[in-house]
Image (tube, rainbow, N blue to C red):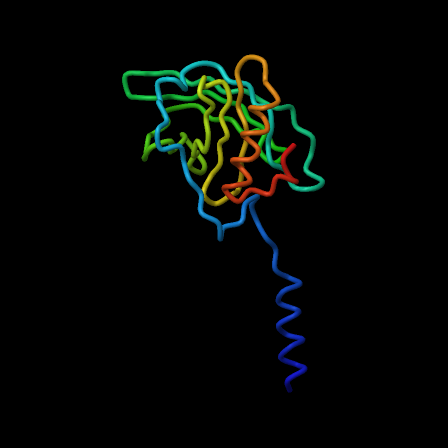
Length: 159
């Protein structure tokens, strides 16, 4: 009987799959001092998280603008090898936290002092990406990667 219970438990573990790109047991933090006005402008996507075997995907871009209703986004991003399009208002739900027109919340986990590079994730860990404007300095890419790792993301899946 004991062996049967152990085999059933092991079978349950084999069938379990981990979804997302971050450890949900780790805390995630958005940038508490983010200045939303400094996000305005055009951004190039320089990295995404993808599962092994995910289709290649051309990294996208995002345009963030200030409207009478607040911050709005027009974006085409590569998320886990799939092109995702966003267009519309980005409701602010807290410091560094936004609700895009569709999909999961975007949390700005880190912005460099000059607002040239952003690390963006979501509490569920279903996606994450890095945006940049201008030349991407290696130290900013390294810092964005380190912040994603600190927030529980599996950096081995960043491409």
